[in-house]
Length: 248
Image (cartoon, rainbow, N blue to C red; front, side, top):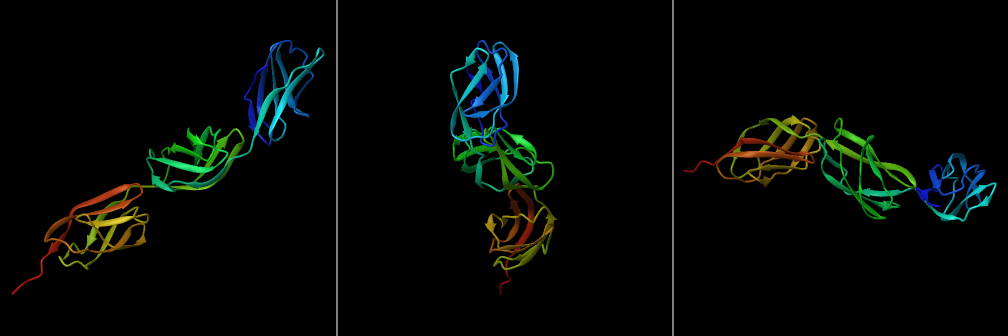
């Protein structure tokens, strides 16, 4: 007499289908000592019922006018607990893979990012990975994991749009570096790095449209300026020109 599914939340509420023989006129289905609710006699070979709350492993039995069946194991699973996300932000287009760690993740069937679900790959009871779906707009969304034990919330993931560069001021400075440059554009508030000719520059985020950076030393000539955030990079090709100091 198999049952499907054979596991469910400790809080109850799992719809279980029981198949077997001589199930007509079923009067009760029990999970251990507790009676199931919403028992429906589908046919002589099938009964459905909703599990009550419980813990551990219990035997499921069916009672008809002919007696009570042998017990079949049903496993109660606790709700998952999520402790951390491997990455808390990423591109608005999605497509990047992140990990989720916690406990009770072995039966995970879906991960929701702001209501958009993705199917995870379960590594163990404490770890899964999932490909982030595309987001609707940039900004934070709630992350939830659904398992046989239920759904748990409490984590947040931030969708980030690609940065753009619209202007630099000034556009030239000494090869010795130290020039303060204001970079304007869009989606700059999550900037992780600024480079001039591939060399990292110290910077400060002013707001979503403005950065302040200080040029590192460089070689005379026009160089690319690159701004990078979790979604990707924006390049102003030849946007800054290093000028050698005069010599006498």
